[in-house]
Image 1 (cartoon, helix red, strand yellow):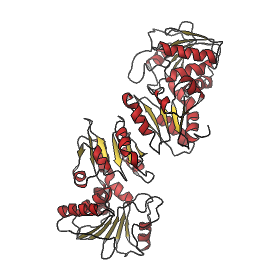
Image 2 (cartoon, one colour):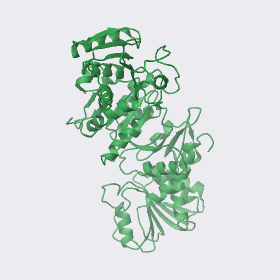
Image 3 (cartoon, rainbow over the protein chains, first blue to last red):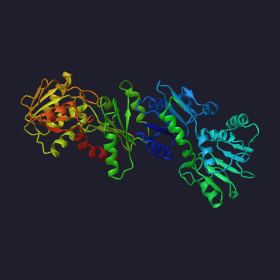
Image 4 (cartoon, helix red, strand yellow):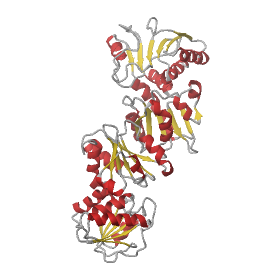
Length: 258
Length: 258
């Protein structure tokens, strides 16, 4: 048994996508959704990790940073970013975690043949997923990145991370904009579930823009609907999930060796 | 989402049997196994009940009595027996529970056309399930019941319950025996999973004996294997499960009205 922990939880697609990947590999395992009220996260998460037949958890909004405290060991991306999107129990009982959102997003772009190197990226939302996406994108040496988050300190932290990963990339902190941008990334939760808002005010998008939305539910977010009307290239949150699922399942099934 | 809580948990069949019943009714719900170490039951159970997307729990060995403390309201059988085998959250947030094992066992006997009235029953094991089975059987007025449990006080308590339910039934406390018995019921955990023991020492069983074992895994317990070799009529734990599942799913799906 594996679980995905978040609040809200209705939007998650891991239960079917990861369970499907287990079954594809002939593994009799299931991943189930577990809504944990944000105010009670610490107490409930610690209880869930004491269920001997639950061997790992995916962490989603708003717990990627808070879950860090539950990891005994961290992968390289989690060490840099200060967040995890999964935790898995090793055979010695210790829990290790890492964050794969960035890799999943990059993998979605590359499998669609959309280049990142040299291009201009606007990233809106730098929480657990957004920060990971920004850093993973940075590793592919974009020409320019503009970062926006409601938390200015977080923007500065991610800016510093990117500067280490890709010194040649120009990184600015600034308001959401699609002027002179090639790729627009929404990694904020705005537009999730019944939220009909766009992540920022915009009437139209250039047709040559690539628009990615990390939200998995609805599949057609308000931003993606606008992008589709404007003739943009769309990359969906589900593709980011697909990009990271084989890796996450590798970690779940072989926690001591990967 | 629904869960079954027990320790051990590998033997439970509710995950497939109750999930199948949900699906048969067109309900997109799943029941998953949750192993809770017995020493940590109170803390972990209280956390599990705070997951807003988990609406009910089945309780199994060894938690049927301890789970009573988590119920705000009890059904009639739970009130008598001091145990629950399920808890479900009502729309006002209160939890109600009851124990359906007895009804499930009786239903298994009746659907097989095995009469209970006037017959002589030996019941071994009077824990959560065994006590419920003894009382539910008593409601069908057996001629005689002999009770055995390692806890003498529990035997006396169930004896008193039976005396109220069926004053005409002769109820004795005594060692396991198949002499002058029509029905032998094992509701102890002896024989579960890898436990190769019989619940009591016996070489052979009379061919006209009906033998019921509440254990669901393995399906062929050591006791049932002996009973089969001796030509007895067998009633399996899975049949008791089948007998209570529709009722339990009714409660899970309509917690305010049933």
